[in-house]
Image (cartoon, rainbow, N blue to C red):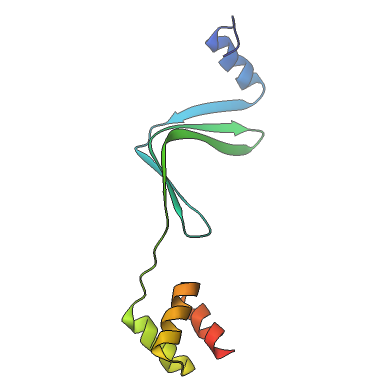
Length: 110
């Protein structure tokens, strides 16, 4: 890492600067993105780093990503239809777009 410097010396210097690292043993790391997609990191190498009152994580491993699919229930479709007076097709389309019951009702009520 620092050519010719003993790793124990490096750890000591990091402690003096207020930096600590700890390996976290994990089987899988999952990150849920705001757009609903999910990043899954299999067989990860995870290091927790604490520095100046902040904690961060360094993660590496086998990465795969999948889109989050939301299933629309018949009860949700019925509720949207009852609350807004829309057709079944409109309810399904709006729920498919918003992926949220309350938001679908608000969208169709305007």
